[in-house]
Length: 125
Image 1 (spheres, rainbow, N blue to C red):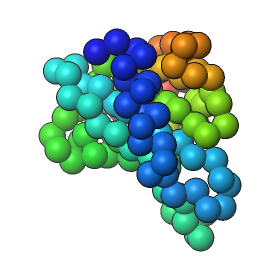
Image 2: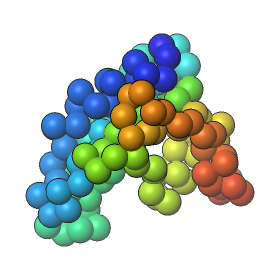
Image 3: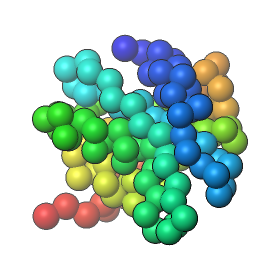
Image 4: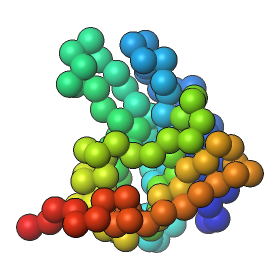
């Protein structure tokens, strides 16, 4: 699957986000190394600390289904280009420190990074 296709899958799920407080909707599509895609959206909560990001939602869905080998993740937001927050960077680093992170203003202006570029010296036991 190419970067644009994964980005479009994330974009298709953007409207499922629950963001009544920030109005900043985020969608993610996580590709496993064997080609399965898991999607996620951000889900906000009145207790702000209970909010979960789209990237972690996708990752938790994948891990709960037995997948732990990830190739890339595409992230889309209602506000343009979006990068994983610090918690998501560390969360994803646990499973794939060399994960390709795809984002962009739209599907025709994509940028990619390696997760270990976005989180140098990430923590692992």
